Length: 360
Image 1 (cartoon, rainbow, N blue to C red):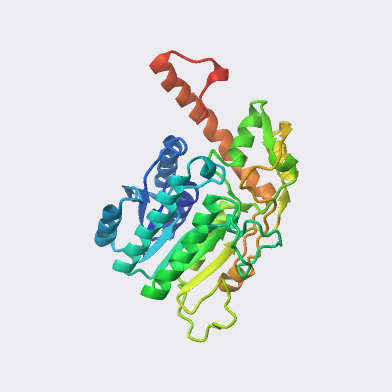
Image 2 (spheres, rainbow, N blue to C red):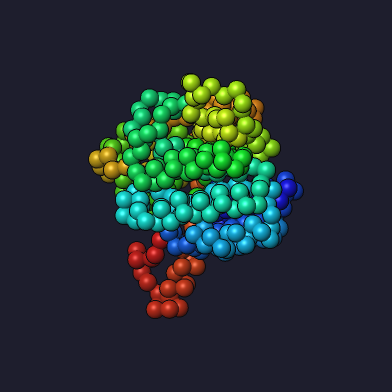
């Protein structure tokens, strides 16, 4: 199939693109390579994908560019859209709220409009476990209310689910929303805890555990996310004429629209997570305990039973195994990235001392 992957240079997007290429699909990638974190990592992901599976069409385009998105759809006519591009991060939304409106609302509207104008067989889009917000009843089920978000990021993801439903109802766009739970693995984002903690532990710097380390997270290895996505591609939602309007299920609809949780269903205490990182890095962590941060959810745990019923698959890679794979990549990638940065800085302004090197 011809599949458009937005955010193709991102963490999940690169892994998804690699899998689709290996499966024989024609992938059209889209990414704006913004500087929310160092674009060099995004470029490196693209090189990794192409080294593993060959070159693919990659459009350097911003979601806010309505005319550009429309022209891309008009020329490429994708059969399936996997929409992973977004402004990510809970804490960053406290400082830069407008970027979430631009990317997550305006950008998603442009994708929906193009799916309407150039009909696709299936639109799959990334939501987030953050939508559960103040709900502390775990495991989180897709039938639970998600009306109390704790951050603008979470609110934007909930808005995406509602926007998709309106287009499914009005224009019969088959749309599936995927609530991801704490995705980790090789090539992850440097603003997420695996890389932040691994760097700090490796360099003998303290790591910060908020809520005094009392969080639990349902960690989900990136390959399990991709497997779920791939299995859902042919399962485009169908309109349901007998859907119960008197007792509506929030995860289904009379329209061709569906929601799923994708999570490991095995929440892990943050302190146990750090202990596993210490094990694989073979170094002890210095820990700084801090209060709960605004916007943070205390615990997450997915009920992914609906996903298993639909696809026959449930995420199964343990945190121990997944962190082992992550650390192997981290240990290989970051020494080289740091060396490249040091050389670039040295050629521009003279070599900097080791303790002043820029974090990639």
